[in-house]
Every structure is written in structure tokens, then in C-alpha cells.
Image (cartoon, rainbow, N blue to C red; front, side):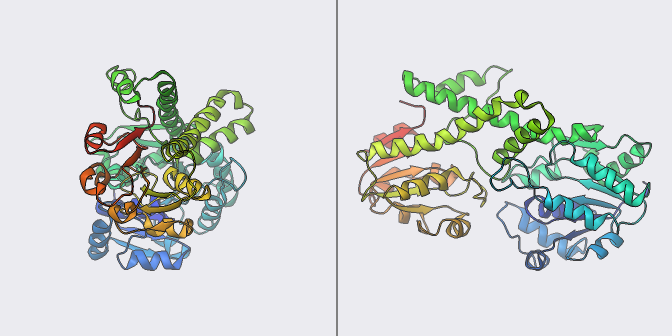
Length: 443
């Protein structure tokens, strides 16, 4: 393509809103669509409906420039766009491991009949293998050779999503095995021209492989996290220190230190549901044994939460009845307000059910947490949450918590006990201030 394409983004949740804003920042004209009028109104007036560092400023900048706007109309999107990115969610089905593809199917069903001839439909949602092929067949039945489908998986890290969109470590283009694949690749390269020019590695592959890249990456990362957490279990049995074990392992170039940090385990809207959907799809394809190890990866991850509750209960004398427990952290990770499958809130709710009065503080996720767990108490600061606490649990590694002064916290608690669920605090500093310090996988 010689002219710069106009881009649309279908779905303006976490992935879609970030993609729309950042593509406008790269200089493209972008139209975002969502069926939720309130979300469109929020974005159109400059408000990001979730926490992501740097995104609000870029949203306002690109609204002001006129390059970015939002709508609820598929007709408007179809008329406007040359390349349509579908960025809707694929949550885990209720009561099953499999992914719910209803949002993906609805988006394509609405877009295919309306899209202008020659435009490109690009899936970015994380989907099971075979989804793109099925959608491609539907596209052919309805529009013949007028449209082409490609898949471009996303690799965003919450808290770093702007950076990951503007300067990704790679781009993956999945193309259909047709003679029009070259045209689709040209359209994708035009849509990412500012990124590719930096340069950024581009992997051009088939649809099946492109769909597998994201789930395979998440499966690998989840496995690495659960491996070091399994070693934490062994360290607790042997008296070893998992933080020193991790440090020693990290010097091996074949292993590396990233995602080799023991603690409360992973959560959020991607890793847990993606590895479960991967297992479910493998079973449908008859290769479930190939991914049977992911069952244990998932089990190790969930055991970390149980172990955290157990350690906290031991520290307060074997029962939570009548205890006041301060929980520092509600989001599944720092620099995010995402509480989906949050280990911190799971632990907090479990302890509350066992008889404790639980008080939570998080720098960004408080409102989301209150909606999901109204039975818990909330305060507007770490000191407020810790007031009169019999034990403090550090469950999300925000820098605010890592930098806390234990002497200051000592003045408000009922007892100087802390359990570090993220192995992110300095044990000597806390013990030096008179605190009983415990952590997962450490003596």
C-alpha cells in the first residue's frame, strides 16, 4: 500500500483502547468501536476506564489532534477503515476451562457483511487454534475474495502496555494460505510501518502458528513462575532460601532471571485463563497429554495462595477468629487496577471467611476490589489498613509498599508481624525494626 491506511479497533477494553490510542500516537487515523455506550463516551471525553501508566495523557493528546475518535456504529467503522483490528475479550467459560469466543464471533459477524471490499480484518484477541481458520471460511462464504483475514497476536504487559505497543519486541503476522496472503502482509506492514522502521523483528507465518504464539508464550511464562514456586515449597521443607536459589539459577544464560521470582503466584486476565483454554483445546484436538504438565503448573500456582493463608494463620496462633489482618495489595500485579483472578484478593477473602476482620489497601485497585469483594474493609492508605492489625500481609509488590518504613508502621499496628507474599521486602530491615518477618520459600 502506498497511502497510509485508516485503522479501526473493534473492542475498547484493555487491549483495544491501548491499541487504538497508541496507533494514533504513531500517526494513523484511528476509529475505535465498542458496543458499550458508556465506555465510548468515557474514551471520547478523555477518560481511560482502567489504570495504565501513560495512557490517559496519550488519549487526550490524540483526541485533541483529531486522529482518534470512538463510536458505537459498525456501519461507521466499515465505511472508515482499511484495516480493522478485532480486540475483544476471550474470557474463560463459566464452569469450564475453554475460552468463551462469543465476543470474537459477534464482532466478526457484524463486521464481515459491512467491510469495504479490499479491506483487511485482523484478529488480535487470544483465541484457541482453529478459530482463525473457521472465521476465514465464514468470510469466504459470505464475501468470496473481497476481504482477507490475518492474525496479529498481542503481547502486552499490564503496566507497560504503552511501551509494548509503541516499541514491541516482535510482531507476528499470521496469514491465510491463499494467493491473497501477500496483499494482506503488505496491508499489515503498512499498518505497522512506524514500528517496523525502528526496526522491529517481524515473523510472518500461517494462521495456525500465529494463534499458538501467544498461548505458547503464556504457557512458558506460567511454567517458569510455577517452577520457582515449586522450588519454594522444597526450600521450606529443606531450610533453603528460594531467593538465593533463584539468584544462583539466573546467572545461567539458558535459564535467566526474568519470571524466576518466587512468591504468591500469577493471576490476572491472561495467564490463568489462557493456560486453561490451551489445555481445553489440546483435549479437543486429541493431544491433551502434550499439555498435561500445565495442570500441575496451575495447581502449583493455586497452592501458593493456600500456603500464604496457612503461614498467616500460624503467625497469629493457629486461628483467625477475632484477628485484625491488614492486606497490602488488591491488584494482581503492581501498576494495574486489574483484580481478575487476583491472588491478593483471593487470600484476603479466604482469611475473612475464616473469621478475621480484613482491611485492604491498594494504590489503584480499590474501587474494583470493593465491587468484587464488598465484605472486606478498605482504607485509603497503608497506615490506615494496618491500624490495630495483628498481622500485615504484603501481597502486591507496589513500590509504595517496598519503600515503607517499618518504624512508621510499627506505631499503628497491634503486633509487629508481617508476611511477605512477594519476597520483595528487606527482611533485615524489618527484623531490625522489631518485626517478625516471614516469606514464602525463605527461612
